[in-house]
Length: 171
Image (tube, rainbow, N blue to C red):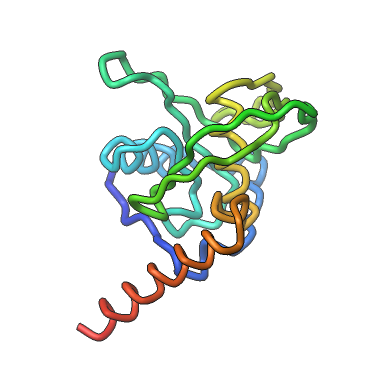
């Protein structure tokens, strides 16, 4: 297990669409690294693309700080239904540090995914889990949470991170 570097905007890899995990492909080492990286950050969800691996793998753990870990793995997740009703959560992202914005998303989603053994499951997610899964599945499709906010706010955030990246590259 290893803590990996988390990509931050404006890294163009965050806008790429991740490839499905092939049947029988072992991603256990990747998942172990993702959990270690996510817990170290700390965060509640991580998509493989955020550590530079273009595979459709998501890790989630919604346990509170004083609770034992409740790790969940979603391989090749896909949203198969979404509710019409929306819920609003203040979202943040490990790839956009220190930025938090309210985002409206469907309140309930049904997600189909495979586990580490390749068995297919479906889950009806609501509340924070629904928001987290939609956020992470967006990553797999090259979409960031800031794509769900106003263009003005998004442009300000991207400009700030682009300037910081240019300063870092010049040093």
